[in-house]
Length: 230
Image 1 (cartoon, rainbow, N blue to C red):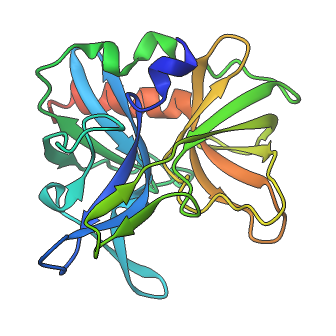
Image 2 (cartoon, rainbow, N blue to C red; image 1 turned 180 degrees about the vertical axis):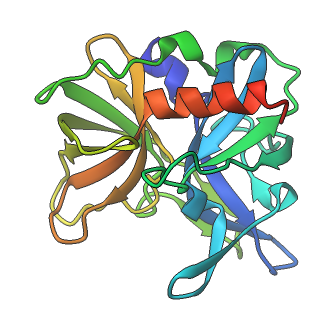
């Protein structure tokens, strides 16, 4: 898998509908397309598609209010037909992940195929993180224009911390943050296989971030299919 395939085809910006009648879009985060056992999924972090209503309470948006461009330059959106509920398997399961089924008519070449998932990653391994940082992506309601800019960050794998999570160290420029990159894809640089999904940056340590392990994402998709949820 090449960087060209990833940029603008696999990793995509996530928008939400808002109350602006003239241009009802708000930038929310990032996400990725995965093709697994005949099913097209769009996967992102749950907090990307939810609205915070209180300090510890969020409400997830319905699929029709989540807007994902068909590609980085497209004015058309991917039809997300349903959000798939994922049940917690045990106490260590993190539910900050969202799966949507895509009504896909185009080629699966625009998705990460599940055989391209690899969690055989070691401390110090080089990574590439793809996402749409808020500092570079702007929705201009007056001009009715969305600026889309995907960035590839270099990073290093630090350690797997539990079933769902690993820590990585991302190389950032001065003043740069990972805001907006949540839901983006993390690849092993040497083989360009998916090893995780970006979750969040440590607020106390610049560049230290948490990712959702790709092998758990794979198992969740297996369970979704086995339980007949798609």
